Length: 117
Image (tube, rainbow, N blue to C red; front, side, top):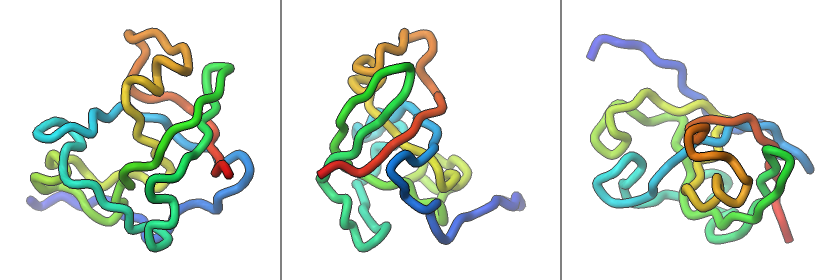
């Protein structure tokens, strides 16, 4: 209560290589990010499709199962965290492993991502 946060009404333009920050998310119930998934951006057109994530000198394909809502936050569904920026790619630990990032460095990393066919 009583705090102001920046919210985003749109996402950056998606290019063949879109810059973003990779973050760690469990996607499990009762854990950080464990609320029911929502795919609201662009009417859910990426829902259950794949994106390529490029970071740490490697690339991995990942299935889109959720989208971070840059307009919401500070409630139980969002772990009472501030609204997220509009350039976040949350990833499960298997993505971090596939990118060859050592576990002690998991948390946030600059990446590029793109849609796949």
